[in-house]
Image (cartoon, rainbow, N blue to C red):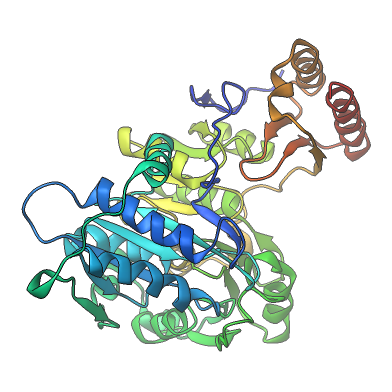
Length: 459
């Protein structure tokens, strides 16, 4: 019998509870711009709730940092929230940075909170709000629940007058991130100049930042793709949601490696020189291998092949709920330095406690330069095939029923030692997500269909 990685499933596992929030989903608030819940009215009420929760303590002058990605509705929502804060006597500093930079700048500026107006990898007609506390961390479930409660109950707060009105500062130059990169990563510029890197910025937040940093700070020969945002082309047939684009571009330009981001820059996928894609699981395997660490963190969605590889190199895999904030919560309280989701949220704790696609991509390039490796030589395992199905339901709690749990257990026993089964509720939609991984796709199809039938019949 094969021996697999030491897996720890945290107590907040998907099988333990379903957290119900009306506004907040897996990663902040998200939806179609100007449709519930992403309306001006809700964002302004949310600004009042943020003021109550994060800006009430002490006598100091509070400050909120706001940034946005490149979608057309960004200005509308960022200004709507900024005017509320200023009217309450809270200063606002607007920074044109990607999501991970904002999380780093919140404690650097001594701000009370940070707000990123972004719908991440979603198309331009969506938008969202991602929140960071004073330490630059994404909010825990209980904090989001508190905000929703405050939002519903708080009366209109008294407005500031005279010299007490908040000051709005906009588009200040931020050198701190560049300095942090220089201090964290070391490149042999003479060797870097020999490597051609294609970078797909998804017409998003990294459109100006990533090509400049790769070329000027690191010395690579850079080919930029989708670096010209116009407000509606963010994530449009590019970036991490269309990975074939970066793979094809690498082949077309005869490049050594390709890096693709999402709209707000917190996710990354890599293309090797052959156009094959490496996801967050592969990047996590690199980090575990070259750092010789004892423990890394992923989610229940991590591929089963990653488990087998990590076991072979003696690394413990800790699994959390889906969502990089759950990975971050574990890393804050434990010694793990590296964490990642397959989707490309990669966290390096010494850099930031949120996923930073740009830093993760640079880390892969650093490995290539330092060890003189082709990108394909950094692929330490081949992912197992996965079969997925989204089952629409009226009540997501049905997966906790006796019949559903029995069917899930039987499926897990069928694949024991050869793969894995995940059945979990969607964090944002009335869906049960069912997936199976293993080496035999017909068997996986059969397992997923049986589970779907059993759970569907419970409605």
